[in-house]
Length: 104
Image (cartoon, rainbow, N blue to C red; front, side, top):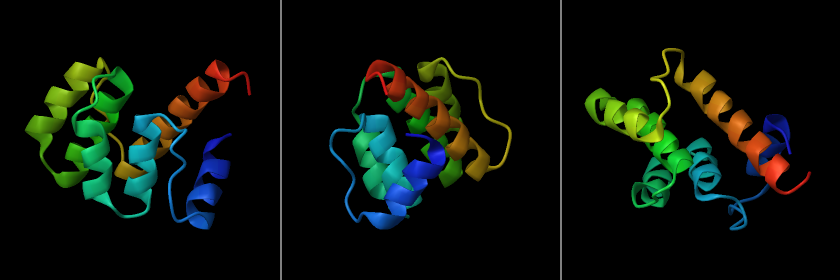
């Protein structure tokens, strides 16, 4: 699945597939406009991808101090572009990771 297919799935389905990794689930809910649900999914996750999405969510919230903490935890550089560009960047890379892992 690529980013455009993921976006079409988000538009078409009300609920997020539970088979997606937590980080992609959070990006799903963020795109649906549910920041709280997205944050709840990643706030207690211990993986680097979830930490990266957590950083993005705090940047979106305007809490740059907290965002920088989570960028550091994720081993990702702080993103300097627009929020929608960051969403697409993270989503694209995480989908490639899932496709590689699942042999798609």
